[in-house]
Amino acid sequence: MVREIVFDTETTGFEYAKGDRLIEIGAIELLNHMPTGKTYHQYINPEREVPEEVVKIHGLTYDFLKDFPTFDKVADEWLDFIKDAKLVAHNASFDMNFVNYELKQIGKPEMSWDNCIDTLEIARNMFPGARCSLDALCKRFEIDNSARTFHGALLDAQLLSEVYLELLGGKEPALLFEKNNDTEITNNAKTTKVYREPRTFATEDNIEELHQKFLQEKVKNPIWML
View 1 (cartoon, rainbow, N blue to C red):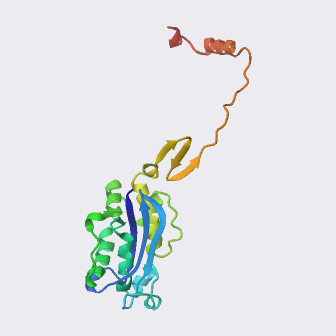
View 2 (view 1 turned 135 degrees about the horizontal axis):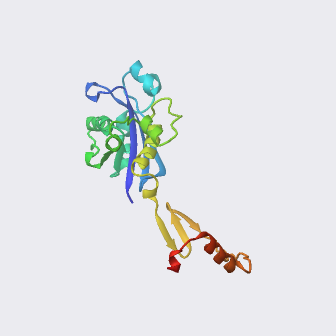
View 3 (view 1 turned 120 degrees about the vertical axis):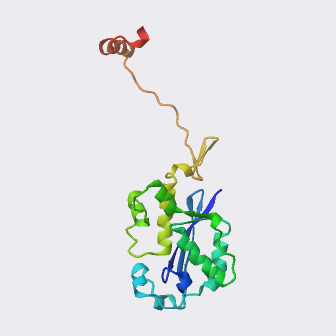
């Protein structure tokens, strides 16, 4: 079983080295590229104001965030959730750098770049020259993102998990089929087939004669007569 964590972050800005901080993490667990229903979501107190121009992007103000725990209080929970799973992110360098910077500040192990998959890079290779933002890819793959009025880490992770599956070729690669004693397992969902007697259909007595007449009238020089 391939375990992956699709995740997204929101921050106070774009430069962690200049004091911008992490304010939200959202993540979805996948097994064999399919969501398991397990998620992680956490707002984080950045201990600094959030610039107004950034609030316009994700809607998260310091007044809202100040009552949530700081990152050092939730880091262990985050690391326990991801464990050694593959990490999937859109423009992964942004999210990885921010989270790893926060982890480094409190002496925690950083997330491994060897385990990271960047869907932005995949999309750019697949659609050279095309727009590859999350919204653009949702439109391309007909994924409903109408709820995305603001950027939000958990919602964006959920949308990205659908985009990621499409980038891999759609749902077919993740289908698992197994047959045993008339039982079929599809996508790990077990269903039992109901046995039905073979059906018979009434035919005309001269059906063979009518068939031969049809062939003679409609098919000229049939190959089976050569």
